[in-house]
Image (cartoon, rainbow, N blue to C red; front, side, top):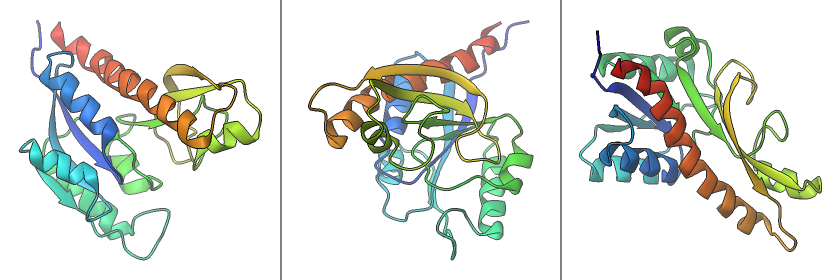
Length: 198
């Protein structure tokens, strides 16, 4: 029996929201059998919330609390509550800058994916394009992976290579990696949603 129901997504982000926009555009173009149910951010004035609201989507700020690298436990419990209320089936981290902890991992086991701007396991953590330049890497890229309790350590789903060019700066390299991200992330979500078509 075919299941034509779209995959219900919940998106978490901390920044401008360019990956979210790429996903939303692919959904609108009929390239992904999914719908975004809710967008959450730990940054009150994050661009991702503005983009979501402009599309008429539910978008909420979650006050992160006192920690810099993760949400307060009660804040993460609130995230779980909102995602469940929205009927979310897959949690998408689109530029979300905090570690995911037990409440969310336990609520959505193997159903949280992230995009990271390097070819993992190389250059995990922050500003990995700068790490690649400093290491003298010839290639870098981006990785979509399942999220576990570590920093960028979950199972890899897909990767896209980006060459490091002579004369590259952190800004030029990061810009090219983002182009690759905007292609790869929607492709992966489309594949995860595809089995629902029968």
